[in-house]
Amino acid sequence: MVVAVVLAAGESRRMGSPKALLPFAGATFLEHIVSSLVQTKVGKIIVVLGHRAEEIRSKVAHLPVTWVVNNDYAKGQLSSLVAAVRRLVEEGDWEVDGMLVHLVDHPLISPELVDQMIARFYESGKLIVLPRHKGRRGHPVIFSKDLFAELMSAPLEQGAKGVVHAHWADTLEVETDEAGITADIDTQDEYRKLVGSG
Picture (cartoon, rainbow, N blue to C red):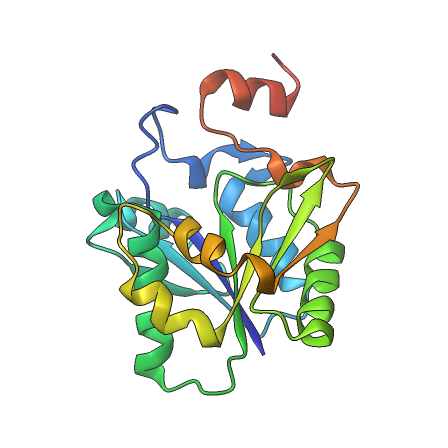
């Protein structure tokens, strides 16, 4: 199976409040992402929290996810990815074939694209699968379990990008019409544009 991992541990400094809890389409960013993932073929959903973890979890405690708290969240996104992989290893979930990594500041995720990516992951046998829209790569990204050890030992300051670059030849890009794969909502201005008031 493919496990979905939503990274929501950052400080949201430029936004000024937790991006996971921003209202969007009648729900929060995190609720919207999880409700989309629930409709896909992912076998499990892990949400990694860090900054203000208990505040966020208390407000979306109803979500059907496994919560992981990354106390090293200040070290960057890769530290949260490592925390998720560690949880999978600890649980001994050897049915996991890959991990679909999504960022909480990319709320425009569609079940259809996720399922397409999972299907292509199994068909192609590639180590990495990611979407591309008009020449731009986006999220989510699927990493094969064969890369878990490499992700866990990669320099935190480089993030997962170093692993992606190292396996350029074994990466499959899935073309999509969905512009949302590159919609990274980091600032109040970007958020206002997203909700149509900017």
